[in-house]
Image (cartoon, rainbow, N blue to C red; front, side, top):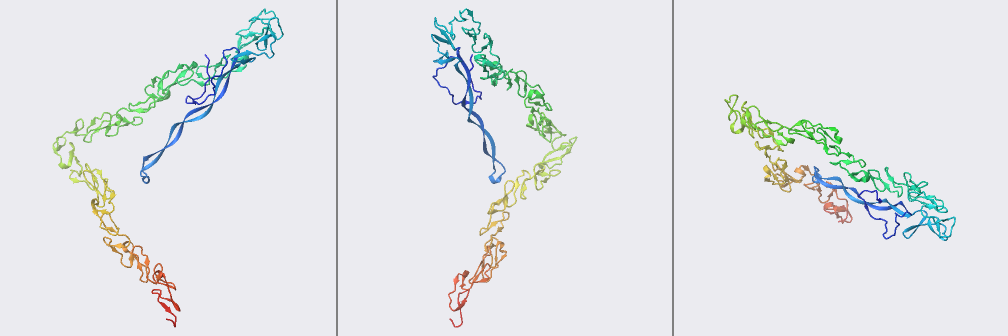
Length: 565
């Protein structure tokens, strides 16, 4: 019946170390001279917890610079562990006041040595025969006291009486003149001096201080409520709640999750209600049922919408509008079961039959249909209106589709680019010269041009050609139909449209117009003579003249002074 001490931590904690030493002799807690108390000690425990981390992944998107891949981030969690410090409690046994430990026993202590006697209780000596003393016991038999051992002790609950005075020495947990009373509330132990540590309305044993928990609580000090699924005295009763319901740790009363009710949460919400305590009213329309937990509407056949307020879109029917109507001749179908609602002039389960025989129309089926036979899908049995086949239009289906349209009655617009036309029947694009692709949106690759990009360009000198008609686009410095003719003297650039600015017979680069000076000239446009003392191409030659007035900047010929040759 003794309780053991525990740690008030989560079940996910792991005890790493305990300060217990095996092999140590301990006192017997049932010995009347052994007292006990609670002591705390520190432990290190390992705790599990959810550690967040950033998870990176890629997804397709419209970012062309990153090759249509975008980075996404999400926060995930993984289980990690960490060390924390905690406190545990244990019962420590020791000799009661007035006793000391020897071996595994607690024996009485007399502060003064018993002469001619033995110590039988704290500071009480039992004398040997023929010896007496004011501080020695008289050696009375148990339950008697006084000078002649004639007085009977009145002590109760295992208390001993002083053989001299008859005063009661109470055992742990009792008090009063005759030790007839338990310790008062919240006290226990020797002389009822120790204070109980119990919580949550618990009582403690008047002798040991052991906590007797109130219903709904557990733990050494009754500090914890019953674990989930249990309740009542000593948490021994199992909860009877169903469907995820939780019970009160004291009374066991069930607290039901959304959508459930009843003493043990076994009953779903009644029709038309949902949520916590079934207190929210459903708002589904057209016979829709609402989920008793979330209130989400489950629509009947033929209806959709958050509250089942909308009929199925035209052309669909049934549960969740998942079925396609199979009605013909422009008939509509009933949104609930898909039954066809035929237009005038037609009959049959799918409205596939005409009232009039083929080729005739009118109330009496006496008029001949005016439609062009091979180009017509049908002639209306009442009005005679023609329904044209793909690629044909007009009142009598005798006209081809106009540019940009195709399909039955030429009602579908073409989806072709760059001026392309499309086939009147299939809508397939017929690309203009210089373009390819299903929708003619792709220009011919370099070096090709014309219809279906089937013609090769004939341009020279690295010139490109126009993808439509193959016309050459010459690079700077070239001209001609195939860019094979260099720019004529005095011109340069794209199309040879730039005029050279070079002077003094300097050559002009046909690509960029830069000047190449002739001998004796320099500068951007070759309009500056070589400086004195130099001549030739780029003025790199040095004059070698004596007694001369310089040299000719073109040839380097010395211009001699008078009297010199």
